[in-house]
Image 1 (cartoon, rainbow, N blue to C red):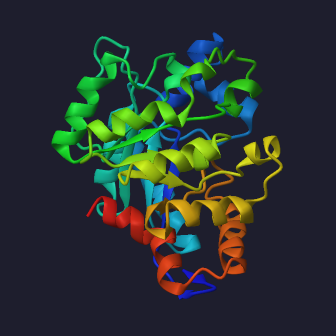
Image 2: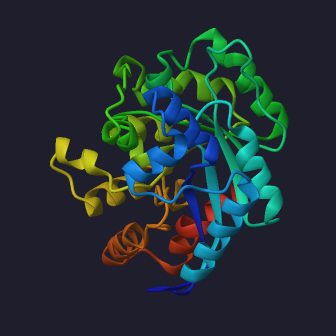
Image 3: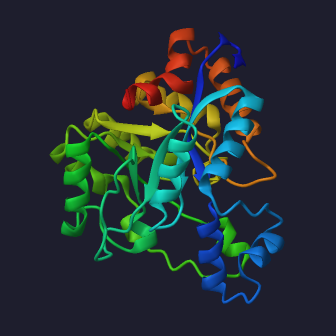
Length: 295
């Protein structure tokens, strides 16, 4: 893709894969008699094919349109791991398969074929230090699988639009809780999205103390309003502490017809250019670091 640093191989480290099962789960939660079609109509989103391979090819074409080389696809509900595994298999070499897992569930396990397991402590109301998480961490360490841990402010816009409750618990949102865990599993790469989503200071402390912690730059980062920050300041502080080798570019793209969120990419690259980020460092942030994690 053409960038201020020339032609760069861009990989997006944060794309939600909203499968047909995801829509079905929302319909069940809402008790919507119209099923998943009604949910899609209410949201104004395209209802994906029941076969995740079809949605994978739609995403591949969308990334081609923008010149994006690869993307991490996140199965955004527990139990939907096979959708992203199937997507990655449908378009070989194009996607990394991430999946949300609730470690408090009795059948929680790391499904074969995943590149990263996604943990949402506030959503599922547990501490990242709880013993129930250890089996997943052990499996991740043994399989060279990354662990994505959502910290900070957690809002699920789709649930709000559908009038569904979000009984999350922010007691479990602090990145500092991950400190002892990251030290205990030094071979595991821990990915903290959205710069810590409001816990920038704590996320930077964590990254400073744990070289296996990476920060994902995705989303509009609207949490900045809590601290009066702008994106340039956030990037500058993250570069000063974590360095360019531990920042993972992401957009938080999710649904169609919007598709890949080019606006997020343009805003972030413009910010990095204004900061005078060197060519080699920009290439790491925009794709090289994600590729290196899974190489």
